[in-house]
Length: 538
Image 1 (cartoon, rainbow, N blue to C red):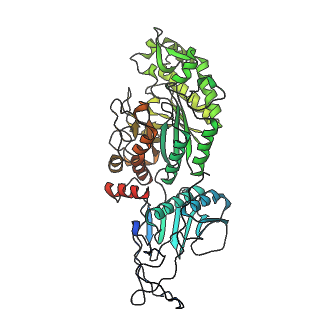
Image 2: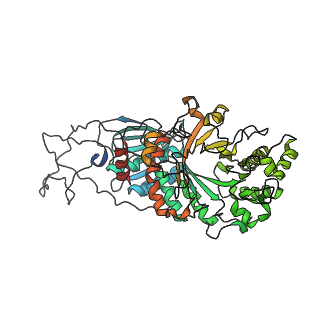
């Protein structure tokens, strides 16, 4: 767990004098006025005056009344809130966070440090002001119930992840309005894959910057961080099997482990990508004998010659090596933009690939068959490590005798590739898909070609996980096959923005994206209200 700045503890509330008619009402609303006591500088209620020395404190009125609470205002919005009458909950000096299972210690310590409470560990006793984290129930492991009642908070879920997300809701409630509203929240995400992908190959980002994004993603309930760390411009993580390919400016394995561990503490899986057989320029620079060349001997940018056994060996070496560094269940194989398949006649242009295809798959074997076989072989490599592979949609080819392995998830990003296929073609074949729609979710530095920086408003108002290509949604019957989506930063023109400018530029798009992955329905807040809430929550 990382260190967190402790908030100054709230002052302990003192008994208040009754104001009018023997009872007073506290409005439990939403936002900054959410159940917050107005007080003077000396801690007494504003306008109440000071109790003269020796005068006994007035007894609390037994007839307090409260209006029904309003739903929490959080990003993403909670799916369900059952209103109740009561003052809600706010952190107070001496308050505790307790757990019913030692496996929740990380979640308990984190939220305690964030709210200025004491982490008291595994306890069964009950005290006023407690926040209790508990495992229990069944269902979606990312679901949780948060009950605010009798001056206490209970967050309960079937698994650690759901409990963690409940603590994120509580943190936002307190930071946004001071008080968690009375009642019961029942919450769970619509989609199991909620990601942010970062291109650190073309532009190196510092470990500290990436860790800041991990904390931001965790608070927003994202659960994946993709790292694209190998491309033509650089290879950005230390390698022990092939140190010759590593760029001067890179992350050490110790730094990556710290990022991975921090992510795990936020229930975020780090998904690595070594893109192949294209986008391998940094590897090829150290191994020029593996460069793909056409029939005239001209080198093909970024492409490795997949007819050479050495090409498979070096990529598999790297996949095997980094499996130990990235222990999550997901692995991105890339597979996009292999330049041998962007020419009019791949067989004529690359006779060595055509010959290898015929040798492997018979007289009808094609270069597309060979590339599909390459993808399947790399999937087999990561599958041995217990990983689920995914690949870009333009790494799946039409009319091939070799079919991509059925468990390779389609990372659908574009409909602009040669021989482009509609998303329904993948879905109708039964494939699972993750939405990386470049129309909405691609933040490409420098805005090359036709790319423009995406806006949070456009994502919030027009995109849903079913909008896989362009602006049109696929039929609702395919919704269950769409596992989720990922916002992506690509650094094509790396010096167009500093990393701080990137952080500012993606701030609202990330918040809009998670809102639609958590609940793809029409938001209840307008964009102006949503943006205002984001600014309030920080």
